[in-house]
Amino acid sequence: MILRNIALRHGRRALAPPLRKSFLRSLTTDTLTQDSISVEESIGQQQTSAYSHELPINPLHFSNPNNATRAKEGVKENYFLTKHLKKRTAKLGAVVEPVYVPDTFVRNPPKPEDVTLELLLASQSHLGHSTSLWNPANQRYIFGIRQGVHIISLEETAAHLRRAAKVVEGVAYHGGLILFVGTRAGQSSAVVKAAELAKGCHLFERWIPGTITNGDQLLAKCDLKVVDKDDTEITSGFETKVEEWTALKPDLVVCLNPLENYIMLHECGLNNIPTMGIIDTDADPTWVTYPIPANDDSIRCIQVIAGVLGRAGEEGQKKRLEAARTGTVTWLPPPGLGRPEVGGEAEKASFAAKSAQSTVVQGNSEASPVFTRQIGDSPEL
Amino acid sequence: MRGRNLKPSRVYQTASALLASNSIPQPPVWYQTIGAIPPGEILTRSQAPQHREIRLSKKVRKPSKSFRPQQIVYEEDLLRKQFYNDHPWELARPRILLENDGRDGQNCNWANIRQPGRPLNGESVVQRQLWLMNEGQRQKDEAYDIARKEFYALRHEEEVERRVAKEEALWTGAHFGKGALDVGMGLEDKTYDEWLEWAKTNVADQAMTREAAYTSIPEAAEIDLGLDGEEQTELPAAA
Image (cartoon, rainbow over all chains, first blue to last red; front, top):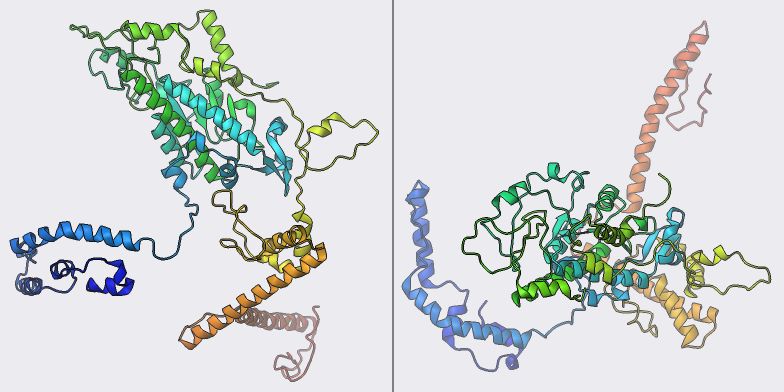
């Protein structure tokens, strides 16, 4: 196809300036004489040589300097020509209505501000279970009955989700470790994305009982690291402490299917760790600290909720690092860490610690004036 | 274990008690956040949203009944019931429940039974009928007749299109597989052949048991299996 056919098809008005013949030649797909000669040569070489190592590395000889300089001259004009053509022809044709694409909520999760009742309705978050299978403790979240199933009130879902998002943001702002858990099929991508945004940990396989209560055994192979207020790793001074340190526990657990993770939620209760979970009409709202009444069977609903909480965590982390850059440290170091052992120069930076894989260690900080003020006053959250 | 475990709901109070008793040297990371945003109320019942008018009887009603979730009823439900009673095969058509952004129904103007982005089915008849009743100021039956006749015309168009498309395809060389009737006939033929084999063996077995009962053995020519179809002879009953 030669380029000038585009002008004929879309009409002369589509292209204001006429195309120069030199552009056409550089853009054409017709066989050039030089290329045809080189192709014939390469075919001849293929037939004569019996072994592949005898063939030349560049059999088609496309690195001809004459070709290269000619191509370079046309590239700039080619680029602008393409841009001009796209601008002129992009709006031709039908207007494609925006439709739901299944992975939008994982690739680009919604923010807490974007949560609307229409979004929750479209994500099937209002569909509860059969009326005979309900947990009466969830009565306050139910809007009504339709076709034999309980319908969860969208306002309740939205209100509880916004509250949970604020909690996640606050915990992330204060340097807490958030664990996102979703062990059902199809939840893994949403869980991983949420953990990435909130700089927390994820779990999409079975929770091994004892991971919190028997963490030193089960998490023995997990690495630990000490980081400072800007999340930069501190490589020297804490080696012995890191070796001896106990397994870390999450500061907040977000569970997308609490019915299957009862043991994990029980362990969190034993260790006084706050939890949040998606509570369907047949789930028990007392198992978690912050219930989010919604449909736990719809993958789309899970993606929306996990996405919103991940975005809230992202916001909290952003605020924490911004505050750290200006000198305000929003968290306290863990007791027992102390100062770095090897520190002859006695740096005046304030230290913090975070783990590499699954645990958090809070580092001790120098008595900087900003930090002592932080303990005294009451911050936003 | 009796009672409910309220430890998850009481993490803040537990942490406060541990702090007050100096069991932990410093508050946990989440302490301020959860203190500022306490969890919502749980386990208490609230009055269920009302979807029907309650007949206020003179007798005192049981208070627990006001907490019971109610059926959500729309005025279209009666129209849907009537339509699907009259057109049961419309229930066999699959329905897509996927929504785009939750506002799919708000952009419809039911002055026309055909809506962009929505399939033509019983729901469009019902919405059209409702529109005619409300905006068009028609009676229910009149609106139903108008809507369903528009629907029939469009379904007829679809069928004609399908038939013409098949003819065009055949004319231009397409090969179709077996139709539903052909598949059914094939299954019936197969079942009949299987039965035939079974019948032959069964007749032979019955003949053998009969022979064993008698002292004399009848001639082979006297036994008529009735399989050639010329005579309608009944098979011998099981002994």
